[in-house]
Length: 152
Image (tube, rainbow, N blue to C red; front, side, top):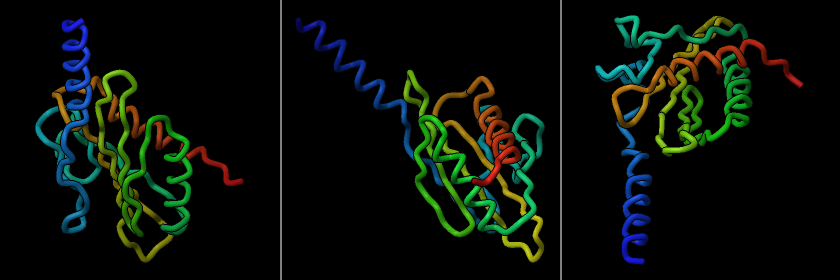
């Protein structure tokens, strides 16, 4: 009985620890936080190498229309928790199904005078080294859904 309780307690501690601590995120000097050196992050603004760079999402319309479209997609996403919604910024936490790892995903809408909107993206795992391409795949899936979105 003691052994079972010990295993259960240890398992719970490990699973709770998988969420990691929230890193410093957000927009600083009109830029999203750079990726760390580990390959578990993609960024459309501050990545000089192919491993970390991902193209931003382009949109023709208003910033508000782009944000509404993106929020619609994020609200329907599995295991997504929208944490911050501001006029020009959205942050979402995606949690993996089994190990409960948390990835931080950010979208930044810089101000523009035209109807051409660029949505900069950053997606990064909080812990570990490799993500097996999950962050890149997530952004590409969101991009596909964003571009295919048909308003009601």
